[in-house]
Length: 223
Image 1 (cartoon, helix red, strand yellow):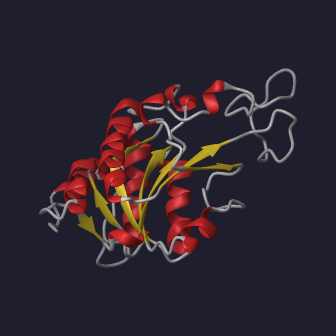
Image 2 (cartoon, rainbow, N blue to C red):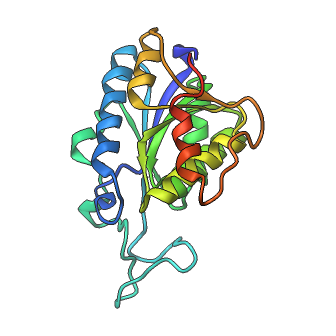
């Protein structure tokens, strides 16, 4: 990883996420670790926010609406749309609002990254099997190399979180997957442990083997 061509991209770490997502606080703590490591290295920090307009313009198909026909979640007039206070952006960070799951869809994210000559992305966020996963697949489609921080992600349930991580492991061919502490070690030039892809569909799993295959991400390879 060339640190001069690396950015930290945090997907939808919004106050709304405190409701209905398992493991929010551990994921926020992991993001805080990453921020503390990246900022002194002048690694750009980019946040995304999911935004639903209360006037109804541009809402996704079948977005959940209240009795007044306004979106229930991620409303543009609600405090819940803001980034969680513990990891709030600074004046030097970028915040990109999006109206679909992927951080790349109809946003300036790719333009900003290319303007900064970024090649490597460190990524985490909410939810693992939704906005985070679609953003990772789109990052790969845009030819970025993804470094996924798996304890910096969370979903509505543990099974969805683990399955999404393994799907990304299987189909993002140059992905590297860490826990936050190990990613910080890599940024500091220290020995670290991470899993990295060496072949397509490398981590096949079933419902009965999901936990054991997921656990192998912690011990498979060292960097």
